[in-house]
Image (cartoon, rainbow, N blue to C red; front, side, top):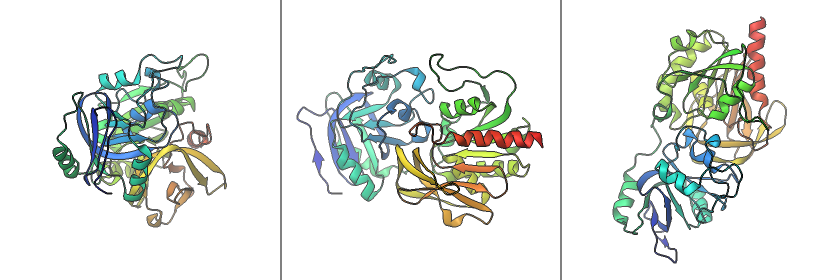
Length: 389
C-alpha cells in the first residue's frame, strides 16, 4: 500500500496508522487514547454491538463495511459477553443517534464508558480492498480531542506489534471459574426465559463463548455447565457429561491447543458426543491430528454461503475467524462436511461413525435466519441416543 493519507475537512480528532506507513485521519468517538491491534473488516448489516462484544475479536479492530452504525443504539440484552472485546471500530460515517424502541443508550457513550475507541469519516471501501489484497494489517488507532498525534510513534507501534500468530488469547477472555447456564433464546413476548427440569448434561468449554451459543444449547434441552479454557479432561469427566461443547474464541488455535488438545483427546477416549464451533472447531481438528493455518484476511460477516457436503444444501452463515483448518491434513476417518463457497476453505468436519463434529461458522447467529440451528438439535439427538443406549 502506498504511503498516503486521507483527511476530513474538519480538524481530525482520530487517526489510524498502518504498519506500512499509511495514515487515515477521521473524527474520533468513544474513549480517548491509543490501541494497537490487527485490522479486519466485517460485512454484516446489523449487530455491531454483538460484534464488539464477541470475544473472538480480541486483538482486533473492526472496520464495518455497512455505513449505518449506531442507528439502533445499544441495549444490555444484546451483549455477547459482559464487556466489549474488540479493540476498536472503524466506520464510514459518524455514528447516528439511536432510533429503536429497544435502545437503552447511545453507541458513542457506550464505547466511552467501556474504554473502546472509534473513528469515523474513513473510506472503508478503500480499507476493505487493501485488507483483501494485502492481508489484515497491524495498526495503531488513536483518539485525541485536540488532534495531536505523533504519527511516527504510532506507525512504529503498529510495526512492533507481534500479531496473532502464536498468540493464545483464550486465556484472556475465558471465565475465571465454572458456572451453570439456563437462559434460553429470546422469544416474543417473554424475552429470555429459563430452562426448567432435568436436561442433557453438557460441559461447555469457554474459549471465549458467546452468550447466544449457550442459549441455543439451553433451548435444545441442555443442562449446561461452563468450564474455563484451561479445564483438564479430569475436570470435564468429573461432571459426568453426556456431551462436550467447544466454544468460539480468539487467537492462534495452535497456541491454545497446547493445553486444549490433551483435554479433548482425553474426553474423546470416553466416547462422549462432541460439538465445536469456530475456535472449538479448530481445537477439535487439532485434537484429531489436523493442522490450522493463518488466513490472508479471514472471514468476518453475516452473509457467508457454506455448502453442506452431506446434503448439498447451502446455508447462509455468520463467520468470524482469521485461522482455518487445513482440509488437506485431515486424517483418515475424519470427514470434511462443510466448505465455504467464497474460497473453498474448510467449514466443518465429523468423525466417521461417531457423534463428534464441528463447524467453523456460528450456527447460533441468525443470518439465515435459522439455517444452521439443526446442528444444536443434532448434538442433542446424539446425547439422547447415547443415553438410550
